[in-house]
Image (cartoon, rainbow, N blue to C red; front, side):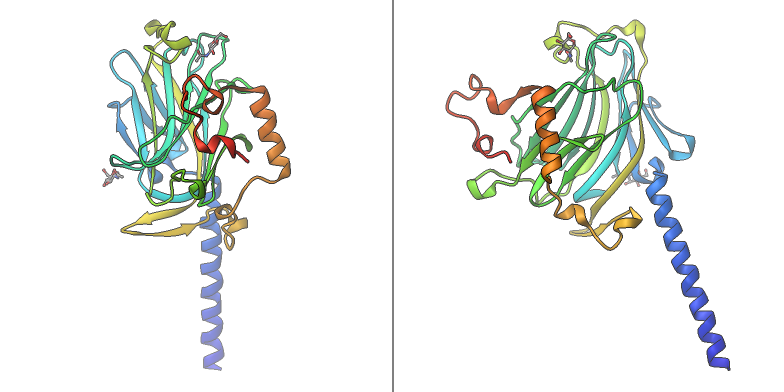
Length: 296
Ligand SMILES: *[C@@H]1O[C@H](CO)[C@@H](O)[C@H](O)[C@H]1NC(C)=O
Ligand SMILES: *[C@@H]1O[C@H](CO)[C@@H](O)[C@H](O)[C@H]1NC(C)=O
């Protein structure tokens, strides 16, 4: 009698625990909290977390830009962030959103959004650095106005591949080609960084169009951060999946493009890519980088 009573107490407690765990993982999946995951790094009040942590805004004026970085370091992950970029005349401004490690041989995976005059297209600039070496730029126009609504920009980073996505559509793939001598970021944990700054010496039409400070402050917004990722702490990493459907299953760790997504990648590259280092023969007179002949 006594023992069955206590075991039913114990199983009630287990059920409670399960409910709590499920509830907290659901919350993690649906309500990202910028207070929990990020620190503001510069800008002295120009970066703000509002709406109980659901929204982060960066702004830029004549005196300063602003920025933030993740509290965690990650070694591999599928990282999603929604951004709404500076509207109107954003010429000269750059919104950078990237992963980076530290030190002279750092790794980095970049999204940079180059502003433009009202009605003219932003450029989405991407790059991959491994062991301190970049020079792997690809640039795109977007198929929507990125200032009207939030859109999701994602980085899938696992030991085999880095894939950049926009609203779930792959726009760029950088494959692990260590087998032919191309260094691949896989040993250095990276933080997420973002900043909004003035780059009117180069960003818009190569620096011809300057920032119009009468339009300041310029503001970009962030929401719905989600990381299914391996969090690095004191020399080891533990992988967590915040999305309940994949709790038991870190599918992203081995994910690559399937045939449908390969088709979509080709569609973007054919219709929206405006610069590709892999076709820039003038820039590489000694021959294109080795990864350029093996892109699938
Ligand atoms: C974030 O800010 C907190 C509080 O100021 C600090 O303790 C922590 O070290 C910061 N994290 C990083 C990664 O800078
Ligand atoms: C700005 O608009 C011009 C004209 O459409 C275009 O050539 C350029 O690529 C656009 N983007 C940037 C960042 O200069």
